[in-house]
Image 1 (cartoon, helix red, strand yellow):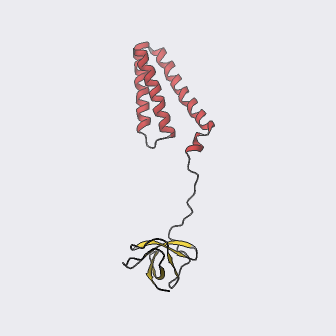
Image 2 (cartoon, rainbow, N blue to C red):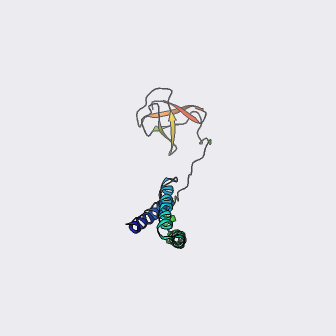
Image 3 (spheres, one colour):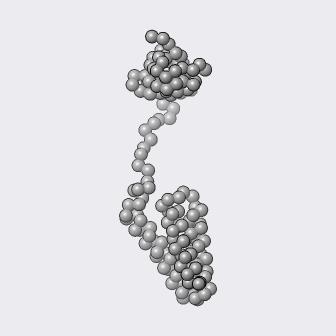
Length: 153
């Protein structure tokens, strides 16, 4: 019974530690896996003596290192890593000036999207609602916010 418990704790600890390394953020699952391993080692030292405990400790460390090396060489990091880059800029005004006109891509309630020169921008009205597809004109640019009003063509 003790041997089965020790093996189950070692397997559970390995699974939780690998989940921590490759899947879940934070440290909760890794701590639980480490706790399972520590309890398994405690049981080994208690039931089978120091020599078996030392061998089990060395074996667990080698097992963890081998799993990490195999995972890194097999490309697990490539599958879980983010490859996209952020293209946007902060505090950079687009090439828009007061008086530019375009049409709304979405309904402005009072915020929405507008198309000017084949570029979409987030815009805001002065409180009125503007339907999608309506023509609007830039009336004010303040604190990186573009204010528009509906016009008729």
